[in-house]
Every structure is written in structure tokens, then in C-alpha cells.
Image 1 (cartoon, rainbow, N blue to C red):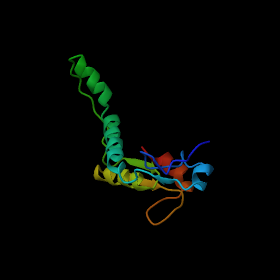
Image 2: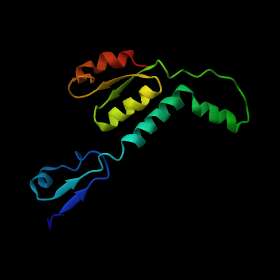
Image 3: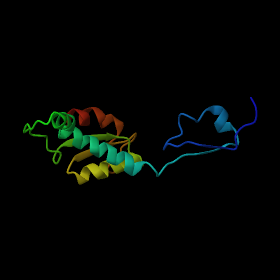
Image 4: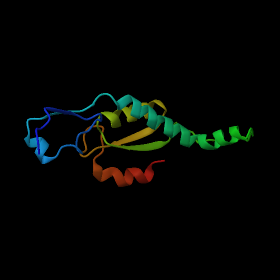
Length: 129
């Protein structure tokens, strides 16, 4: 009840969770922050890939204990990853992971030139590191 807002802005790349039938049928303008999050999220994902491969939590724990213990981390270059979601964020994640030498399969809703379709997700995930 009451007056409808003239404008609703979502501070996210998507608006699916806001798009209800009432809002869609109203004259309210709905905007999002598409184009803002691609690089920061891709850097976060690349950071996590490196942190897991190099077992950063154990390194930090040993450092706090002032202990040196040589350990071999996994090499990221040559590993295989699957990125689910072929929008701008998924494409930027793919680009950064390629820069680390990771072989990336990008999966979208439908297959196209360099993007696998959702039907390929199971087999690709089974081969991913």
C-alpha cells in the first residue's frame, strides 16, 4: 500500500531478487550496479585459488607460531577450473585465471562459441581441479 517509489537501485549486478510482478508492472525505474563488480570479484576468486593452492591458512598459522616448516604447495599453472556463469563477472574471472595459467572452461545457460552449455557442467566439473 502507499505510493510507489519512482526509482529503485540495487547495489548488485543482478536484480532478480527484487523483480516481483508488482514492481515489473509499475512505472518504477529499476537499475543495478552492473559493470562495477567484475574486477573486484575476479580478483577475490583468483586470490582464493592461490590461497587454497598454496595452503595459506597453514602458512599463516605456522607464522603465528614462529615455526618454519617447508611444504610444497600445488602449482596453479596447468590446473583446470570451471567457471559457472558466462556473464561479465564469469568472463573476468576466466580472464584472470587464464593469466595465472589455469585452463578454464566457462559454462553458461546455452553453448556458444567459447562457452559450454549447462549440459556440459557435470563432465567438466569431474575433470576440474
